[in-house]
Image (cartoon, rainbow, N blue to C red; front, side):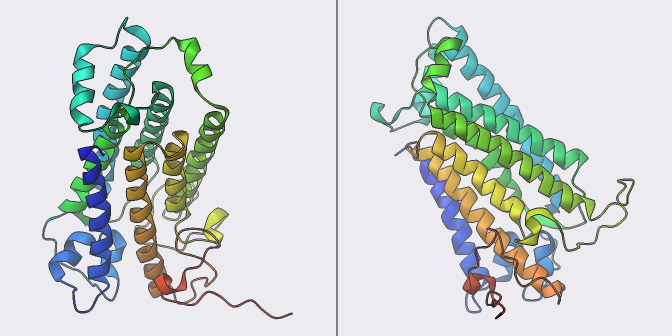
Length: 315
């Protein structure tokens, strides 16, 4: 297994352990709470965090996508040149890949067609999220810790590197890439486009809660989102994020161990963050719809949510 893979697994484990600590009366520490809990969740009654120690504005989320996009775009450009333009794979690129994939074996390497397709989808996703952060999202004065900030920067800067590290070093013609992609790859690319579009719609719904009819931001209060998948889930945009990274993993039929670890990180992060956000909605809105689930629409997990699922009415 590639050494870089252990970093992703450690990050996923860290999120799980942090979640356990902040939900345990015996283990709960203010320092851990301050570093782990961010945004509106810091106002949960059980936390009530007021310290600004090692905190930065949550509106700095755009730094994640900007820094990630710079590295991802450069990486995509180099890989496209190496595979399609160069007569043979450049020695410098081979040295780079050989270094970051230590100690992967030759049998673990995957064809470049699927890897380039995932890189391109990642590029589209980062451009869209950066655009939303700058032109769509409206942020309150909430904060996040430096630890979360650095984790976000690492995630977007290293996800592309993690994908290309297991790429076979061979050149292709543009016509050959179409035959190298399987039928299910085209289906998954279509699914990615739909999930990305749906996430954009959901983010627009969230943003519109703070705007008037002319689109101007008039408040920084948190309100209950309505419509679309928000009728069934508190955080369906988190669910779309999980589905998008599931598509990345499925593009390799789950044979790309690094991509699987990135997907695991996203799964853990989005499910636990969605659970905390769901608790915040329930605490701050007494009439919050009981039929809504934390993240995955129509899938209740009552023990995590803290309340039993709604009972069906008898006819």
